[in-house]
Length: 399
Image 1 (cartoon, rainbow, N blue to C red):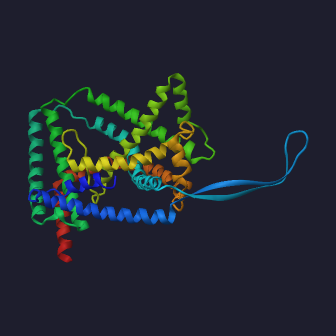
Image 2: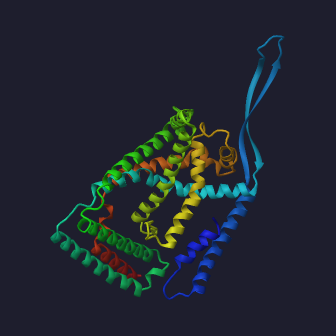
Image 3: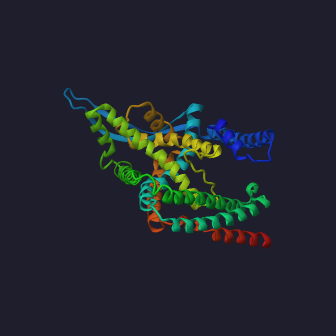
């Protein structure tokens, strides 16, 4: 989490044609050492200052008067509330810190991806490739050829300026916009070939997309309803998914566990998909697409590292969401009695900051994708990229 995977990511991210192995190794190791020093300082300082748990405890103070017969009578009863503090072990605090980092990533990306996944399947069905005649194929091919020539020209200019290795924020934005435009060009070319040479592609895929869209929509809506009914309202208005899992266990024990896993893994899927959507709409953030047979090593490592960090927060989230179903388990005890009550950071869970943010972000993303379904059209227009480069050059000249 802190050394092997980040170092491998930085190593492959610094790869260039004219860069030697030793220089690439040194650059990856240099960045990793900086990350390790920062993480060691954060861990040491936070564990020293806030490495303890504050558990809310209630104490009953009363004068007890015994009768020879029950019930026991209590006079002048008074309930005192106080916090019991004890120090956690260092490994538990490391888990807590990784979970905290994962919670920020999980809230952002899962909030975006939760409802974006079913919408993406419905959009794929709506924009599915359809057979086209030869003249239409030739016309669209010429359009793509013109786009490719324009992007090649822009890319040559960016390479001459050394924009890829620039540390300036505006230059990174321009480089990311260019990479996205190239990615969409590749997708459009494959789509065009499917339309003409494959006569629309596999006819079984559109029904599968509709089916997956319906299934993922049901899962996403169930998650939002469960958060609303079970996690926001105290005491819970309904057990909802907890009761559903128990009923499945009554039929066959494996059914409840399997459904639990489906809902948990859907959250990880939402994280990866949300990361992709976030990168496409905020160009300061580099996208790392995952495609079968076409995934670069740095993209694979980035998404793996993202899953590693957010998997702990997903487990934490599920232990809260399915507290009734997963009660008395080791994970439930670890998160509910220690990590969520750590000094200073316990307020994030006490006031459901992450949960409210995830819920609101999901609704906002859904609304945005409904209102602006063709947000990526500008990236398919090479003139837009040319204008962005022109603006950047004017800002650089003015500076």
